[in-house]
Structures are given as structure tokens and as C-alpha cells.
Length: 102
Image: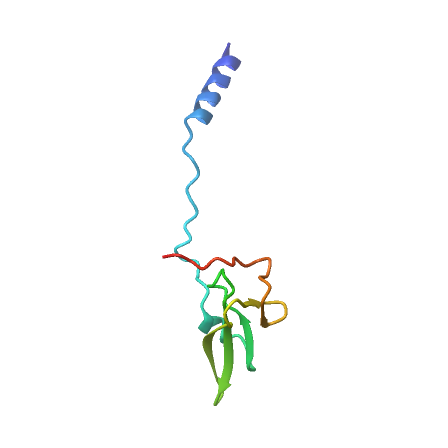
């Protein structure tokens, strides 16, 4: 009998348990071109992680020892390929060809 009572209490406890709290990502950093460029030491281009369409890229350049960033656009109907580090007419697999709608 005691075993049954213990089992029922355990079952009731499990069924009434609160759900796990949601992950709080307010402290997580968002990607920025300035921060990404601050990690390089020479002029380079890289993918704009804030652009899911891959129609833009980040140009990091060094001026008087300071690294600056500039977001540049590919030509019409071209997309930035992060592996080749250049704009191409083919849409890379990880990109969406659709322009974002606001």
C-alpha cells in the first residue's frame, strides 16, 4: 500500500511540475560589421551575417592603424558567396534570394 501511495505522489508531482524556463538571450550579442571587422588586421571582405539574402557584403579596411567597416552591395542579380568571397549570379545554398519585406 505504501508503495502505491509513493508512486501516486511521485506521479502527481511529475504531472504538476512547471515547464522549464525559456532561454533568456537578452544578454547574447548580435552580429555587427564593426565588431566582425575589429577582429581582422588586413583589408578583407566577408559575408554580411545580418543579410540573409546575400546581396551585400562587408568590406573591412585599415586606415592609419584603425580597422573600419563598410557594407557594400553586389550588382543587380548577384549574390555574395562567402566561400569564394565574391559576388556571383548563383545564389549560395545558405542564402535566400528573396528580399526581406518590412
